[in-house]
Amino acid sequence: MRIPKYPEFIPIGLELKEDLYPRLNMTADGVSEFTFSNLYLFRHRYQYQLSHDDNTIIISGERDGKKFFMTPCSIPSRDVIEDLFAHHDYWKNLSDSVVCSNCINLKDWGIETREDRDNFDYLYLRTDLAELSGKKYHKKRNLVNAFINSYTYEERPLTAELVPQALYVLDEWCKEKNIEGDYVAAKEALERFEYLGLKGAMYYVDNKPAGWCLGESVAKGRMFAVHFEKGLEIYKGIYQFINQAFASSLPKHFLYINREQDLGDEGLRQAKMTYRPCGFVRKYVGTLSDRMSNKS
Image 1 (cartoon, rainbow, N blue to C red):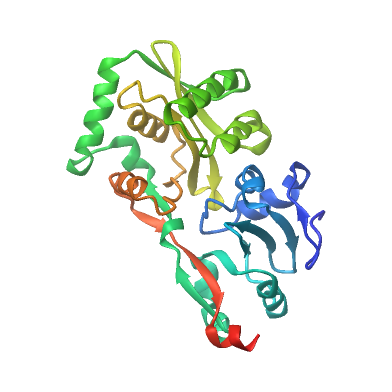
Image 2: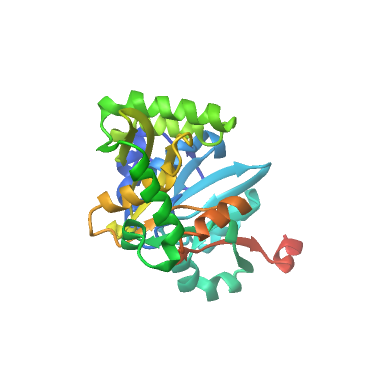
């Protein structure tokens, strides 16, 4: 393994894919951040650094002036955890399987956990998004039908030859929204999608590039995480159409679609809830208890 043993850290690079990809792909919960592609594409935003102990990969990051660490596969030894807290503000993205199997130990170690609702991943049954059946999807179905009746459209699997067209949509999306958002990560995802193991689709309206989406298999192949989805809103209903069409195109072995978190954005939360999630990939934040903090 090229990833050094704790306490030494190195930046994440493409050369580490072989070390990270298999281990992260086998994590049970399907946390959307815990894929090689996601960590690599957002390496600059969060200043990711990597290490490991005998039990898990250790990821160190920083956001808004606070340092955090993540342990996607399991919990490190107590000595390592105590040392990590000496250099970080909090433990991020603890998943259900890790918390539930280790909750007694964590409390004994003076670590408190709380739900991080803003970072819960939204889970949907693939068949629900593909079929949009029943009263609860009436409005979505109407928008998709209106799109289908209004435009001549086409869906194609994303290939290297289509990347320039996807980049065109991304640039137009950025102008349309007047925000950068995840532009940098999305651009690199398109440019490196084959190497990163991402799968996606391009969508056309009247033979013009109109949208695309990109994601990957997680949670041992039970779940597909949609990391990026871009469309030009001059075409009414484009996002509802992409959502439904891509879900329909996915292989049936994907039981769930993970559409990631809302990051506390109320508008985004409302939009994600209108698709009636069947559940969430719950995530937790770990911090030292007041007693332990005062002691240290």
